Image 1: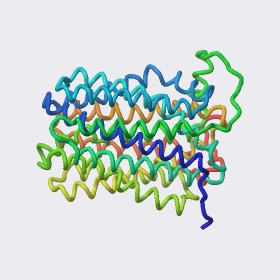
Image 2 (image 1 turned 135 degrees about the vertical axis):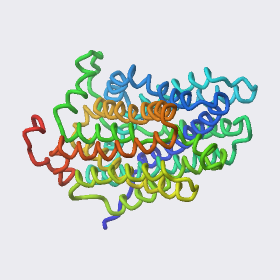
Image 3 (image 1 turned 120 degrees about the horizontal axis):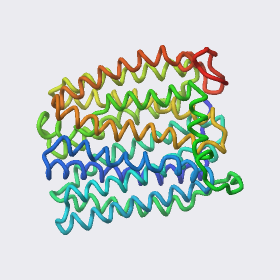
Image 4 (image 1 turned 180 degrees about the horizontal axis):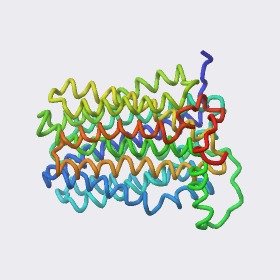
Length: 411
């Protein structure tokens, strides 16, 4: 296999995202644990996800326009500055024992806003930093970096959590400060288009583009539905405390387990990228993810729970790399920000609304029932999408058009 020499600008972007991602993961683990300690309510844990999703509804279209009209590196740095402010606020409140559920909900909105503007800019920046032929590997490397953050952040938060979470938030602020400095050294080499005032038409262009390419729509919406029903992140504090009895340290391990599997898989995909039958790989990976979540819901053993969560992360990584590469390869550069914003909205809906769905169904059926029902629903979604999006299922490579089908929409 030919070597992949990553450009320095891409490595700086990668390091900045890893540091900021680790800090954010640390904050979210501590925030979720403190919310459950304050309220002892699965409903409130679900509301944390809902409040993170509200900015997605409000700012997705403007975020895509910003990513296409302004230097993407600077946009990412600004979002990391917003995350730094959130960490500093949590640090101050924790140190002075003034944490409240209202404050935690407010910080959730702040973090959701940062993520809404960060995702399309960061994803769209990668193709301008690496050669087109290396995009799949760069995507896998970027995903590997993200998984390092998702592994290290929760694990470090679990080790550092000392009652109030002050140490966790202090370390998070330092990591974010370093990330911002690294991000300021990433320069977007693309030529910016002439400034066009935002309008509803320009902001909706990304949504129209996705709708007209049914394989892309199928790939993005598959992620939405699978994680919406199959995700169990919001319920991990309940599993750690009431079912597996492993405390905050165990919670950190549970949060990190999917990322361990994802990291291993991303390394494999960076060295041996998927080249053929990419659509089939995507659908099969999501189906296996649903099976893993079904097994997690039924598990009462900590070790088994870690294993199936790790496997779920590996299968999810396959779907992430295939989906992101497919979207980037099929999208013109001047549209990547707006299309990335649409993709981020779907991802945000799947993650944050998925957390709300998990909390709501857990309040009705209990945490185990919620996860089991979600795993079954994910399997049903895969079966439905295989029939509804035949162009996605038959997609062979990233660079070639899928087999045409009457239901696949216009070229």
